[in-house]
Image 1 (cartoon, helix red, strand yellow):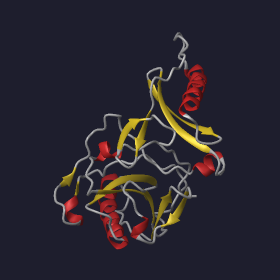
Image 2 (image 1 turned 60 degrees about the vertical axis):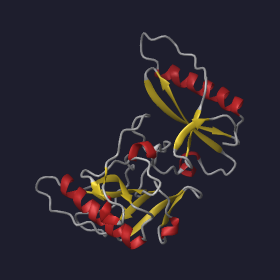
Image 3 (image 1 turned 90 degrees about the vertical axis):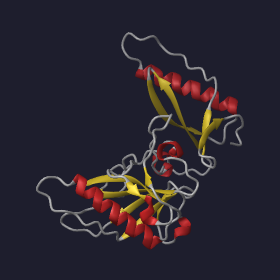
Length: 250
């Protein structure tokens, strides 16, 4: 696979890229001078496939000019095809229709192979804004330039989670992505369950797993930690915000 192993973290992208219900943001990864570059590209609405390809080529042409190593030729980015990560089937699929698109979907761009371009298998990096601000007015009716503000949770990384390949595909397996502070650092763990846990089961398991994780991460001279969960928040993809987890139906 050209994508490499993927990492998934919850995407408070509304705070990272600015919440605008009319703004559509695509996360687009492509190879530029042998490195994968993952950009958050805003649109005034869901683009058509030709609009998406045209914009991706323009944005990555500009990005390539920033990243060009000395002595290398200038690149002209051409999109041969695009794949999208399907969260339902947990796999990459060809993007053939704009009805497949949702804001913050992860896309991967394939380019024609050449002596200066070969799609290599590497991890997808965290998405970031392009090196130069993007004039959203260039893509439709909405004017202005899109500048992403900082997130109160710190910069989050959203990448598609091929959990079938990470854990083995098991339709009855439930995996929770749980982040907590351990000795001053945020630790984000993938914790599998045989099914959807109750809130008490979730808290009990999280405490056990993070107790064990803390013992392996304990710096010399530091006291041992005993993890206790006071509350848990979950990222709500519908309202694009963190909310308290009070029921396993969430």
